[in-house]
Length: 101
Image (cartoon, rainbow, N blue to C red; front, side):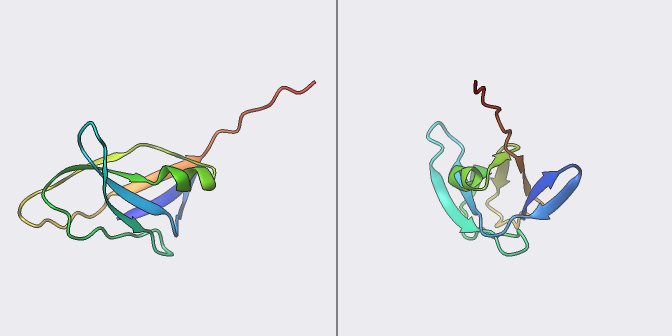
């Protein structure tokens, strides 16, 4: 799985950001965390069967002035699946003009 920043059709890997796996219920409690490698790839191990939301840590998004393009819903079956190909994409956060007189 990989985390990338996308701008103008180009993407670049996000290294050193925290990826969070959240419970898929009203609490949205973090269950697992990991950090991306230099190439944006990450691994979450020993995840019990169930449905989860995957996201980039909001504090990292704010620190890097990035906006998330949305959480990803993933399902882990009781078979011990390996889930591959889930990319988390971000974009530059919008900059708001200040009205100074």
